[in-house]
Each structure stands twice: as C-alpha cells, then as structure tokens.
Image 1 (tube, helix red, strand yellow):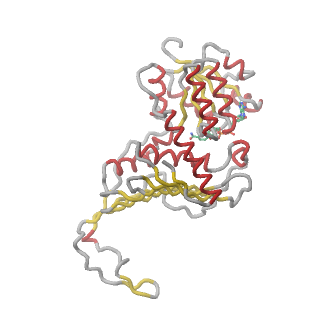
Image 2 (cartoon, rainbow, N blue to C red):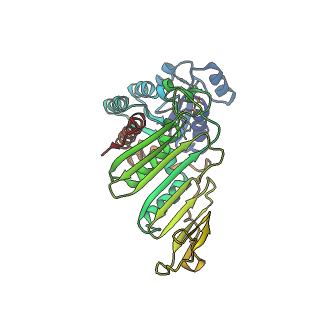
Image 3 (spheres, helix red, strand yellow):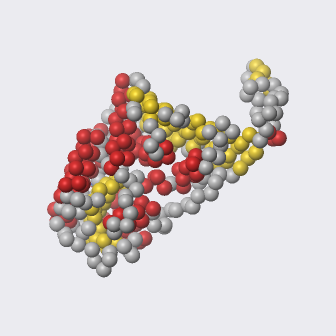
Length: 357
Ligand code: NAD
C-alpha cells in the first residue's frame, strides 16, 4: 500500500482483463495504483505496452512485486484455480473472474488457500448490479405484483459460441459457465436463504460438439417460486430478457435498454369476458382484458450505473481491503453456485430432476 492506495495487477490481458485495467486506471485512481499485467501471449503483452500498461515478463515477476496488494485473474476459466492459488500463496488478495472455477473440488482448494495465506479472495459476479436485474429485485422485494410465482430470465444471441477458448471444454468453455454463471447467480442472490428443492436442465449443442452453446434451467424454490434461466446462441429472434408473473399482475423487461412495463389487475371481480374468435375456435378464458380491468405502470426506476460509474463490486472490494466491510461475493455463495452448476449438468446429462437442497 502506497499513500493509502492499493497496488493492483491483472493476469490475462484479453477482453475482460483490459476492461479491469481501464476501470482501475480511469475510475479508481483514488484507491488504486495500477502496477501492471502479465499475459502468456506476447502479442497481448505488446498490446498492453502499446496501451501504456507495464507488462511483466513472467507471472512470477508480477507476483513477486511487493508493490502489488491485489491481483485480478482474467484468463480462460480452466486456469483460474492454479493462478488464484499461486497469487494467494504470494500474499496477494485476489479477484477471480467468473466462473470462479469449474468444480466444487477445485473451489475448495482455492478457499483453503485463501484461509491458509489469510488473504481476501472473491469473484467478479458483476451482473448482480445490472440495472435489469436490480429492477427485477425491486419488483420482487417490493411485492409489486402480489405473490410472484414465476420468473423467467433469458439471454439470447444468434452467433453461436465465439470461436476461441469458449468453444472448448478443456478451457472451461460453454455457455453454462459463461453467461449461465451470471444468470444462475442472480436467483441465488435474489432468493437469499430460500432453499432450492429441485433442478431440471437441458443443455444444447446446436453449433458445438465439445461444450454446450446454450441451456434451459428450471428451478423450484421451497416457497413455491418457479425460476427459469435460459441462454441461447441460435436465437435469431430474441425473447424478452425478463418475464415475471405474480398473482395480481405481470412484468416484462424486453431488453438491455429496460424497455418494458407492468400490467396489474384493477378489478378481479369483473369476470364478464366476452368470448373471442381464436384460430378456428372461440375462447372466453383467453379473451384479452378490457382496459377498465387492468392498469399499466412503468418499470420501477433504478440507477443505471454504466462503465463510467465506479462499480459497487469494486467499491465493496476496496472497503473490504480497508477492513471496513465484508465482501459482497462470499465463499459460501460461490460454493452454492458451483454446486448448482454441477446439478444442472447432472440433470442435463441424465435427463432427470435433481433434488438439490
Ligand atoms: P480473452 O480470451 O479475451 O482473454 C484471456 C487472456 O488470458 C488472453 O489474452 C490470453 O492470452 C491470456 N491467458 C491465457 N492463459 C493464460 C495464462 N496461463 N497466464 C496468463 N495469461 C493467460 O478472454 P476474456 O473474454 O477476457 O475472458 C477472460 C475471463 O473473464 C474469463 O474467465 C471470462 O469468463 C471472464 N469474463 C467475465 C466477464 C464479466 O462480465 N464478468 C465478461 C467477459 C469475460
């Protein structure tokens, strides 16, 4: 620590590693002195130097530098465990990119190292603070639709899996471990201690052989909530990002721009639906509601903290380093998340419901 600032470094200067570097050098200069990066690929080391960022010649050289208090690990997923443990053993605090690692057994080794070397070890589960998710949290916590009985969360693209390491199982590739790890973490934080009774999942291999390019996950919580999480990479027409059903209303968030609405019943007693022609038949049950029995509301407002804002994740991490707070992303949360991912794969591989907690 120098003048009240923490020395920082990043291992893996790819897409996300360079994002962390920009973040620390542009938004966190009050708390962080950025020291440098290490990337195994000389081309990326040169790119760092071209960006005015010092590139260490080896991981050992970086980890042996006493000016560095914490390290962000932003390599492909399969390397997280080894690098995180090495950094902790060198006395550094560590932020691992998500997914923390690919199995519970590996995660336990990382947590044990954090205890053994008495260093903070946390995971960049940044999408807990996405505005769309915070909007859902506000609707859920505020009981805005009456008892909510179903939440559907979808992330859809149409480009398959990027043709890099994400396409290979040995590197921890696949969409469950990529986008999935964010949108599976979200219900766990939303529901807190509420137990998950059962897990059912389907994994897709539409454009891939080695690892999944999408999945559908169905969770049932002990309080009756059904939660659907889905990632697709062959969806040329995307479905809404969020769809939420409560006893007195429904909510939709269509996209990242937070377009959407809430529709609530205003008159339950008014049941005099007039049958409509639907297809080649008549229906009363599915007749659309008349305007006098519903009310429409805009989505509740949450602050939209983009890249330019210092993230809540980093604010908390720095406060944790200063001993003022405990870390938002805890070891027990990571244990539960990785166990749930394992249950997802078991369910998909064996085509069965897994009874979870
Ligand atoms: P990337 O391929 O763009 O970058 C990875 C970098 O790591 C490359 O430059 C590569 O040369 C380097 N590397 C590989 N092995 C290394 C090693 N042993 N030592 C040092 N450097 C090594 O990948 P990416 O998209 O930046 O993803 C990196 C990590 O960040 C992944 O774990 C990914 O899941 C995560 N990620 C997180 C978010 C998020 O929003 N939290 C977004 C994207 C990626």
